[in-house]
Image 1 (cartoon, rainbow, N blue to C red):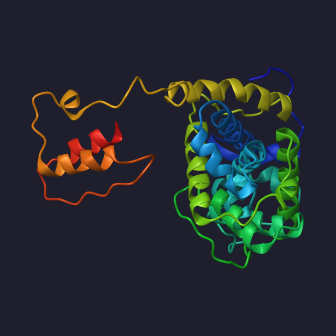
Image 2 (cartoon, rainbow, N blue to C red):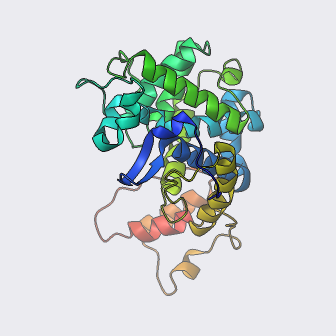
Length: 307
């Protein structure tokens, strides 16, 4: 963490993770963490096949797709800049109430849902996206806790204009920090297919999990000199968490092993022999579904297929 005076940036008043009133991690800092982890993963760890798949809706432009996904990942917790989430720690709402931000009993508390609705409205309104592309992109960002929803939704209970303005300011700040804009992707991103949405949502979910490691990304508290310096420091932390989690630098150690090598002295069952033939005839990544009674050898067949 960069030493120095705390930043006076108003956006840092919105907490994202909190232990006690004196130990918090601003929502915007966590969003930066996730964006940086996504960036480092895509640029250092991702396979060519994954990058090609993610670039599909961008006409095959990997760099454009990467820049957009980094920004989308960073915006995943935009829903925490909402009265429903902030009120979960009433002891931390003082600075927000003093700025006149309203809190109501009907505020939506599911921050993933707020992200989905608020980002959709921002994209279709401020950035002029078509409704279908905006709805799907926003659903990708908002589904990082495992529930993928693309329903229309009314957008009610999000706090009204003051909160919407705060979220828009946060989006613009993330665009500055990551050097790209949602508006720049408006014409490049064709309405993404469901397969792309699910892979992108999985990528953001994993990045969120990695960036939630308190060991690698400790709570910033009030020691943020500037968001620019914080983002620069986050790159080193992202590299470390990717390395420690086993994502960086892994390569297969040689050709796929034979069944006999994996399981010395084991005579393959009929099911395992069939799986071996299926895998041998596969030209690339594939999905094999095996249904069989207990004790027939599904586990060994799966391990062989995975290798």
